[in-house]
Length: 298
Ligand SMILES: NC(=O)c1ccc[n+]([C@@H]2O[C@H](COP(=O)([O-])OP(=O)(O)OC[C@H]3O[C@@H](n4cnc5c(N)ncnc54)[C@H](OP(=O)(O)O)[C@@H]3O)[C@@H](O)[C@H]2O)c1
Image 1 (cartoon, rainbow, N blue to C red):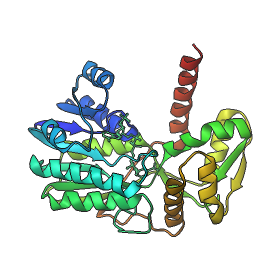
Image 2 (cartoon, rainbow, N blue to C red; image 1 turned 90 degrees about the vertical axis):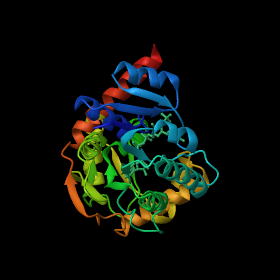
Image 3 (cartoon, rainbow, N blue to C red; image 1 turned 45 degrees about the vertical axis):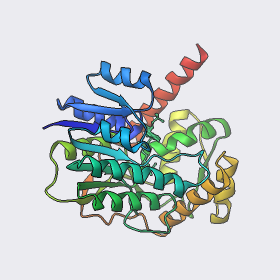
């Protein structure tokens, strides 16, 4: 097997994918945006290139001779136009994959990416899946549901205000939530044993309700949290209050609405399961937040 390239290696799923591949003894080339990140990965035994995903020629160069690629469509909260940003990345990524005839691509997609519209930012993942399929590569589209790590955004607000906001009609409906390390393990497995044909793989984690998440978070923080269920018409405003730009808040509210309507449900070719519990992920996240705080205080 040749070199396997991993984009987004400083991110949650990309780093888990690269770590799993290195642990399996694969030749790994990570793509990062900063020299310090390149050096950190080289120290762990990976090759590293500093390149951005919207630079098609340099991205193509970084894919030279690879047998497989892990790629994602990063979300950027600072852009003026989410679709334009996504399409620029999609053109560059699919263009570089076509230029270098990459034989196998594992793409971090999402439940709901089979739909062309009505899912907020997931529509970009739909377009990236289509663009990669059109290159002739064998595509493994990984379609997880909610990441367990999305609780990260709520840890500080819960710690400080004692409120756990829920962007859904009910806090009592259980939904699968998958740990990003489990997604990375599935991505690495697919890259090490590519399928014979393109497929969409749903990754299903253990199911939790938002109230169960709030209870676990409250126990970990040592305070009881008030679960505040926000009505649909308040979502975009609450997201803006939390710091999102208005057009991004609207798009994320559309995503939450799609989830309420069942549009993000698994509809891929097959399913695999992630078994990491939410409590284990929360312990790891709070350790990280604790050590970050200690670093900042020092
Ligand atoms: N949150 C959920 O519940 C959920 C569910 C299903 C699917 N998803 C999808 O998962 C994806 C996010 O995955 P994640 O959480 O692992 O990502 P993440 O932790 O936010 O990491 C993003 C990675 O992409 C890199 N990156 C950003 N812009 C780049 C660019 N222009 N060129 C090159 N690299 C760039 C970042 O590098 P730097 O360190 O340099 O910034 C980082 O390594 C999104 O597509 C999202 O739609 C999320």
